[in-house]
Length: 244
Image (cartoon, rainbow, N blue to C red):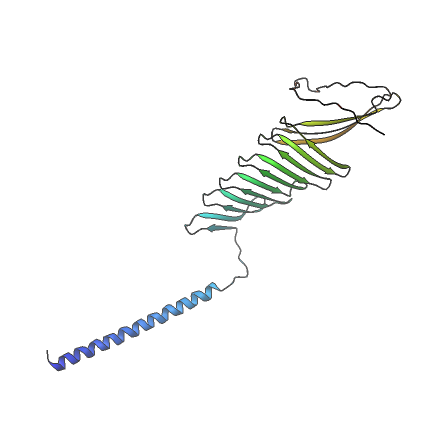
């Protein structure tokens, strides 16, 4: 190859390099423009989005949340990494309710404002209610249960006063007060309050009574109004209160 031929080859290679560099420069400029355009799109804020349902996905494409309207009202559900519901929130016509669950999907907290008041229920790892708090326009009630679901304590605060009741492992108790039983010239009056649990329902109440006969009373009798039921046992404590 002569010297002239070698120079011509180098000149052609230089021209090819310049052309390739120009193409690379143009491609780089296009990439930068596209990136700038995407950055501008990311900063663009929509004033309003309308839809009937939203689904939130994680990086693996798994459903982790949902927002939708149901027949009861709009609701929000969040799932943990195991696909178990962790948060349930629904807005109903009469109020709202919130439920929180642990990693196994067991409900541990429930807050409800649609039952004529505000109700808060706390459950253990088995889903059994262990504590309940109810607030209405007339009273506030705190209920505590043991691991077997037996009601063990009830604190009631109402307009006519407050009361605290503690129960044994049987899960029920009754406080019964008798006034003037030994006074033969006066009627005998009674007041009572009770708390218990029937299956999954808490029951509590207050009662007053009067024996409209002026006589001396020196005893009492337990009576079951339902002949199909019998007393299963229990403990009765009788004591007197001194009055000045």
